[in-house]
Amino acid sequence: MAKRITVDPITRIEGHLRIDCEVDGGKVTHAWSSGQMWRGIEVILKGRDPRDAWLFTQRFCGV
Amino acid sequence: MRDEDEIVRESAGGPYRQIVARGVSRRDFLKFCSAMAAVLGLSGTFAGKIAEAIEKAERPILVWLEFQDCAGNTEALLRATKPTIAEIVLDVLSVDYHETIMAPAGKQAEKSLEDVVKNHKGKYIACVEGSIPLKDNGVYCCVGGRSAIDIAKEVCGNALATIAVGTCATSGGIPAAAPNPTGAIGVKQALPNVTVLNLTGCPMNVENLTATVVHFLTFGGLPATDSIGRPLFAYGERIHDHCERRAHYDAGQFVKQWGDEGHRQGWCLYEMGCKGPETFGNCPVVKYNEGTSWPVQAGHGCIGCFQPEFWDKMTPFYRRLPKVPGFGVEVTADKIGAGVAAVAAVGVAAHRIARAIRGKQDKKEDTE
Ligand code: SF4
Image 1 (cartoon, protein in one colour):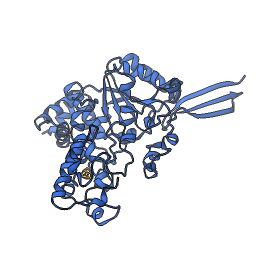
Image 2 (tube, helix red, strand yellow; image 1 turned 135 degrees about the horizontal axis):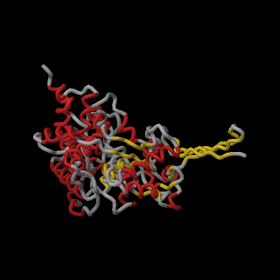
Image 3 (tube, each protein chain N blue to C red; image 1 turned 180 degrees about the vertical axis):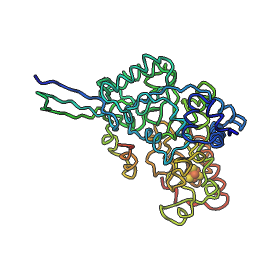
Image 4 (spheres, chains in turn blue, red; image 1 turned 90 degrees about the vertical axis):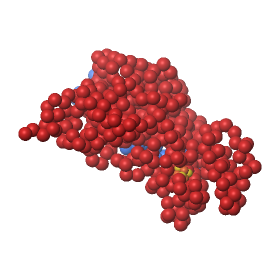
């Protein structure tokens, strides 16, 4: 019988990552990774002064 | 004969024991206490009281929550180029939960947080980085299957105090910029009944967090704040009033183009869009990276990141401050309406009048 394992949050990274795996007979048969946070910076950027874009996109990740 | 350091080392408790264990001399420690007194706007005589408080303090427990963030404030906390006393003072906090740096993951990580809330209820400090999205039941930020708002309610609601670090946590920041796709808000907006201290900035200046912690250890409470919950010691004064380029502003010497002669000479960046006249903060005094520099010193205008909603209110970043009249202002100075720029605008207007009188009027620049 396949067993489902979820690790959420994945720590020591930035970005709220979640991993789900399906384990069957000691082997990982399926795995999914998903970001658990969305800000919509692409949407926020629309229609703004293009010279400002670097300041917005720079904030995708502060690491 | 035993030296003073040795005696102090033996008698010290809590955080101070760790500071001496890290090889910080008594002299450097006292220097740090004087510097903190200065940042906090206290007279030099408080240095002794600060030293005494740090020597005696219990190790406070801190949890650091990350919601809709970029970890920029975490980086500000961690990225000192060499161990400074400030870093060590922050080290004395027992950081029991911090997603980006903690060893346990998944359920074990969440258990660390549950344990703090359960075992130290009302005694720990919660730092929050990042905004809280409310739209669609908070689905846009979840940790361990729980929404940010759900976690914040429990963790901040049971804390002694919450410190919101960075402009996202204090007022929604970049996720809340128009059209705010996720319904993001700041911690105080999300939890109006919780005690929240706001350290705005994108990111906040870690010196101000250190000073807040030192204040907490010394006086057993949070520092006095302005109307939007920011400590007055850090946010009480206008950037423009302490800027090293201010003499050029007063002399009417403005950079007109990136890389022009004025830019090379370090002239005022107002006409390149500097938001220093509308922004409150201690950047020019405290600076960043151990007092190395700050944006205006490096040659770029202030973007106003210490002000709430600056992503909408201060943009376009390269446009000269909106609603601040340009040259030939004599006729319009009395028409300046309310708004964030009101006081600054009066200052700028007065200055413009003075310049106009001196015959330096340049109509060409009034293009906005
Ligand atoms: S406008 Fe900006 S660069 Fe000029 S003096 Fe004020 S803060 Fe400094």
